[in-house]
Every structure is written in structure tokens, then in C-alpha cells.
Length: 86
Image 1 (cartoon, rainbow, N blue to C red):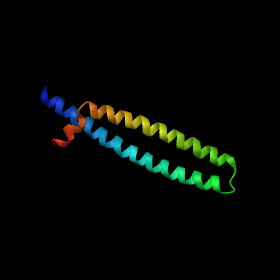
Image 2: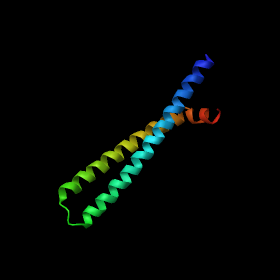
Image 3: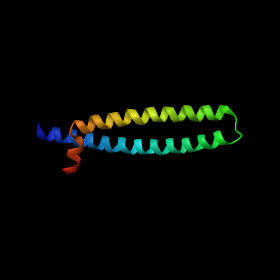
Image 4: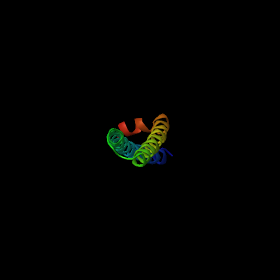
């Protein structure tokens, strides 16, 4: 039924908005970690914290890429247009 499809579309649009917020937060966190890593590389810190920060940054980049792909899939399925129709 069209009512059920509309409910599903709204739920998918809400999920897309949630994913966008999560992706933005991860991008901000990634930027902060990159800044910390740059400071550590310049400073007299040991290489252990540097490696940890670089690994965290890499993991965040992977999560951002996965969320971006998921958001793109949702947008391709037409969810983005439904949100604008409300």
C-alpha cells in the first residue's frame, strides 16, 4: 500500500539524517585526531601515541567511507526526495 511505502520512506529518510549526523561527527573527530597527530609528530613525543592516533584516524576514515556509501545507497533509492516532499 502507498501508506506503508510512505512510512518506510520516512523511516529511511530519518535513518539517512541520523547517518549524516554520525558522519559529520566522525569527520570532526577525524580532523581533531589529525591535528593531534600533526602536533605529536612535530613534538618530542614517543612514536607509540603517534601510531595509536594514526590507527584511530585510519579507522575513522574507514567508518566515514562506509557511512558515505550507505548514505549514497539510501539517496539512490529515492529517500532524499521523499524528505523534501514533507
